[in-house]
Image (cartoon, rainbow, N blue to C red; front, side, top):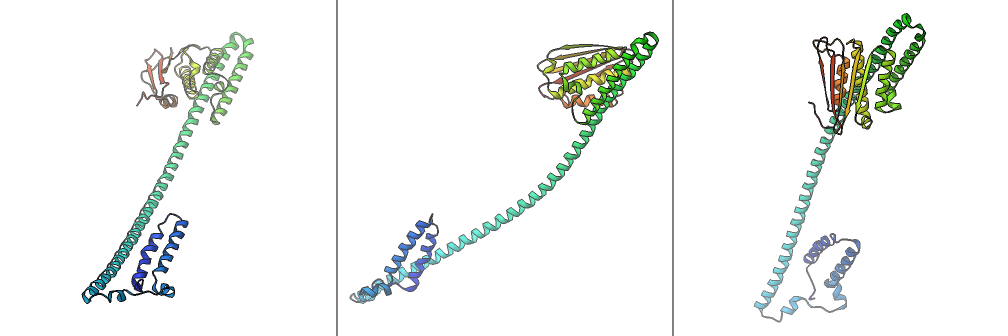
Amino acid sequence: RFLEVPFSFKYILLVPIANGITYLPNRWWKSFFTAIVVLCFIFIDYQIISIGFYTFSIEDYVHYYSTVTTAYILGLRNILFFISEALFIIFIVLELQNVLEESQRIKALNKELKENKEKLEFANVQLQNYAERIEEIAKIKERNRLAREIHDTIGHYLTGITLGLTATEELIKQTPQKVIEQIKRLKDLAQQGLVDIRRSLKELRPDTLEKGTLSFAINKLVSEINANTTKKICLRINGELDSLTPALDETIYRIIQESITNAVRHGEATYIEVKIEVDEKAVHLSIIDDGVGASEIEEGFGFYYMRQRVLDHNGFLEIETEPGKGMRLFVYIPRSGVRYHD
């Protein structure tokens, strides 16, 4: 019975072995080592081996030695059994420690997950509030845009029609045969104003910009004023005016339109000079009239919207005026997007 092993020691070995097998990479290796362990367990089991072989116990072997030697051998065996049991206890303690640490780590992860969830909920609330604020700002911006577009369009065309009707009164007295032609031009002007108003409400650009380039739109605007009124507008363009962005096209057009309207309606100007210079870095616009001028500038909706349009492109706008010396408007808009105004 040399291979006879105490029950406790034999089965204690199975625990760390089984634990080690669980860390193998795949099922094939686990099955392979499990089979080896089973075979080894069978071959070291005394009851199984003794069926086919006659075995001797360690006591039978040490019986031939002296009493002292026998005591040493058996004591050594007991020490080995004790060491194995102590190692098993250490193994169990380490495993329990690992399980405890894993449990604590899972608790910490759950706590962190809960905190992150609360942060996400808070961030979601903030995001919703931000979205609501953005929506409100967008509504206000859209209302301002519509108000600006309608003001620019209606003011310009009503001024043109009013001046045209005034000119018609003079034609009736001097050359009545031209009255019908003048009325047709005023009718076309009114229809064009209606088209522009509808397009503004649909978030589109002025009809003349939709149909052609910026230079075409400005020339058409100037031609209409010169043809329908007694006012004289001189237009000078230097540089590639038609190379600008659509947004900048509309800004330049609206500023010229509003400035002419103000000069004719409020400044009582008879001559207006519009000068546009375009280079690689910026657009320079100046509008000078011979109106009555003013001691100080009172900025209404028209000037406010013009300034806002320029600020949207990071440019600046200056207005100069003196009583009896008309008004001078200067606009500088960078093409590179660099901010030049605070």
